[in-house]
Amino acid sequence: MRRIEILTLEVGSTITKANGFVRRAGGGFDHVAQGFAPTSAGEGDVGIGVDAALADLAATSGLDPAGAETFVNSSAAGGLRMTVHGLTLSMTARAAREAALGAGGIVKMVTAGELDDFELDEIRQIRPNLILLAGGVDYGEKGIVLRNAERLAGLAKLSAAATLAQGGFSVPVLYAGNAALRKPVEELFRAAGVELHVAENVFPDVDVLNVEPLRRLVQEAFNRHIVHAPGMARLATLTRHGILPTPGAVLRAAELFAEVAGDCLVFDVGGATTDVHSVTEGGAEWHSRLVEPEPRAKRTVEGDLGVYVNARHVVELSGEQMAESHLDDLAALPATEREKALTRWLCEKAVAIGARRHAGVVSDIYTPTGRRQVVKGKDLTAVKWVVATGGALTKVERAAECLRAVCTGAGKHLLPDSSATILVDAEYRFSALGTLAHAYPDDVRATFRQWIDAQSASA
Image (tube, rainbow, N blue to C red):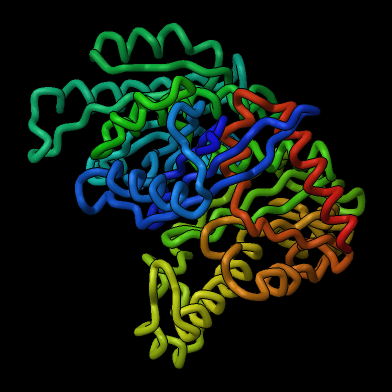
């Protein structure tokens, strides 16, 4: 049996995927095998689903994955639950949230200003896997950030002896705030016996975003956390590259795709969530009207937009009450025509809602000199490519129509215009390539270049 050289394993919220690749002599990867199986987290061991996906890969391709260099990404086990705490909502709290989402975190709570007792209670109830503390430009405001550090450290110290059932609280903390406070913050958490990791300030100066150092730190924390999911420790032994968060892998793929092809917008519609990734600086027409800085590479996660786990939420948000009667046809792996039709409808709605939430919004404000238009959020009008990926969106019929429907240009929302090129990742390899990009970025660029050339030739 011919062997696979490189193997990627993706443990999703509902579906586990295995992809096999071989290296091209001139650079890049050929995608030669693929297998799917339902994720088995509910059975207490995600490895069961992985083994089934590998068996499916071998059966459908006739290729042997044994001995392949293996890469793993995952969004199972609910992802990495985080709470984010900053100084002001529009500056450091938002910048910290952008970094957390871009790295694959699931942000469950964002606060601005001094933490109060009610917010501390909410943190206990959320039971985050990671707490992110930020705030203040470098060598600026200190008081509130330091008091937040004291309260979080005190919360951990007072709860250290409590059992988990009694609300015990002990999670790692990341600090990415005012550089002048690094030493006192380190001392506070050291004295409380709490694990602390420090990154560069996410908002070091006014209108300056610095999200990449924090993104890397969140991904490292994800790798340490995810091995505690049932069966994940065995998967960690299969790879020397660590386990990456799937959303972070997709965002990295989008960044390399944009380097090769131009500004892009990527939709990853899954069973539980819809992730929207964009890589663009925006158009010149709207740049001067932005009221807040935006990162070039941005991810938003819509935790209520999924085509299986959260299908009912999509129906409710659509406002089409008649659609609820069709939920009897809901399936994780749709097989019948009715099941496929429902999944396509859910994808269409998830893309439309997700696009509007991700895109910048144009508003009018009134000043002493008259009315003025301002933009809050990400300007997508310069996007040249709109890409569909994810297990659901890439498998439904007429997926390109779902994407074309959101290419309406600048209106209330700053969306791509009708000239954008639609690309459907029919082989569902985008996240796999993003995972490989951490070790083989040049080969991934070459693969995308060949993909674009093939798209142009068939147009």
